[in-house]
Length: 338
Image (cartoon, rainbow, N blue to C red; front, side):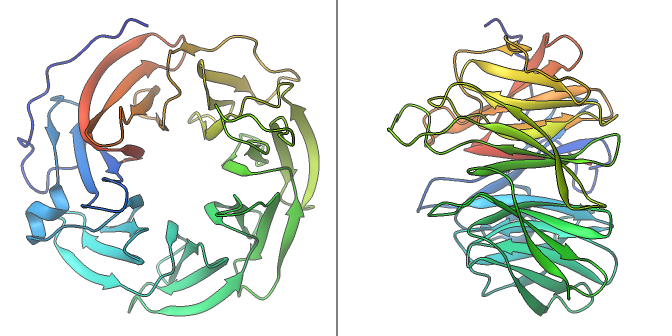
């Protein structure tokens, strides 16, 4: 695979100048050290590393899982630290730390009053956005992960965590009094909403790439109507030994993209069959994916050996052509497009 390597100057983005930035979530070394947040300026190509540490004089903590920007606040989920850091977007100065969260994974800000955090104690916690306290805990399946809102419900994929699961939890967002599980398929690993308002869940199937086992199952793409809570389509993969993961969607909601061992594949939501070849061929399976609506580019992360600074690669979404690349922190796993 041929890529264009861009020359990027580090730590040269002025504090508070994030309007044109893409934030990169870097997990950090497993079980030691700290994760970080980097910022890539779309216009200048400059990269700023460790912006939370620089602003606050302390590390974020071990395994930075994800982040979301809500208004003028940044919410950074620190999985290994059992917490979520809240900071000002303008300068990344700390506002507060929400502690005693059990292996938190993802945050979703619903409105100015409340947000949701998925946690691997098999709950979604409702966060008061005024005082940042936990108002309620809602039971889910095993290993709740990514979340989206559609049709008056919060939908949460249950990845299985340290075990197995094959469900999607739905929660009424008006008062969280109505909730339940929808059976999808083994090991849900990604969730998006398409142009029709339907929900797509990528289910990776039982098993892990490179470690075949007799009870492995092939992956599926499952489409759900949020109005009826019914599965309305399924697209089946054929090989039980290969497991795609990470699902993103373009800005128009018309094309899905997912990771596969030989590259990044596209799937138009109107299609009935999977593409036989990748949009973006690769000799590795990328770790994280993101879609930048402002430029119609796909961002993909390579953590290398998981103990050194990784790399981010950018591709044109229409034809998969490489654009450039830049260095991130240790184990880059996701993005937030400001």
